[in-house]
Length: 324
Image (cartoon, rainbow, N blue to C red; front, side, top):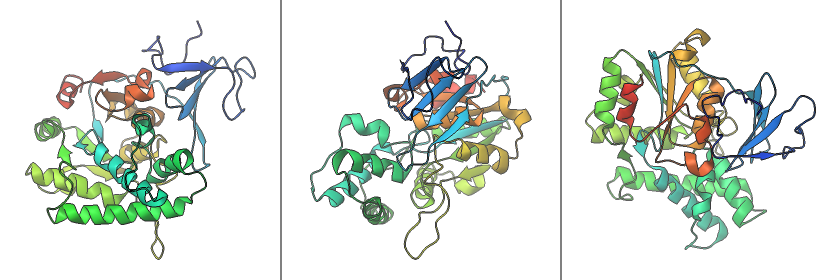
């Protein structure tokens, strides 16, 4: 059987299926050096295997796909940096943000009782706001403008975030991960740099971690973390936005920027960098950035079919302490 670079620790390729021709038509097994084409269950990307490399074709609901090489990280066993996802990993909030998507789509469609289906979960968590909304539009109301959906989304978000700040918000919206405080202090005590990495836009992401730190009496997250990278600021009429809607997870840029720019780590340190995620998009992002990926089992990794890309899977954050 042809060995697939990037999957050497997962020979069974669990969660992946094989296709003969890529969806784009750009690649075909048996032609131009292509050996095999593998697709995870959520079909958000394709892995194109050659004798000497594996490419990852990241699809885009926004018409901006990209191709990246899939690295084969070899963790050295002495971490210099831990890169942590926000939603679902540091703070349990994924269901809140999926609820926000529901409320936004309800307004767009004009059905107050609109609800997402269980099958939608891998497509409305872990990616960008626009990716989530475009998926919902394509499935539930084809032809509706994304700009209108985004307007509803930010209106709903602004209202709900203000309600939370006023103490009237949705119960359980932001809950710190179990033993997050103890875990973070122990990692920091080992002299390991900690970066927080999220596909969430700043106006939704920063209040989350601020809320969690306030709950845990941990002070200012800007002082605690060595680096925090979000997907930037939302583009709205009359305001300047920053790049983030077309380059979020599963693209590698958020994790690459955190490690290389935020923490000042070079490629020589790649084997000493760990990333931990609960989403399929995040796991792919870590791997495309060239780092070792640790997957939390309570997210959508298995539902999305990318467990084969996890270098290690854990049930709780504290299990990471045995790895780092």
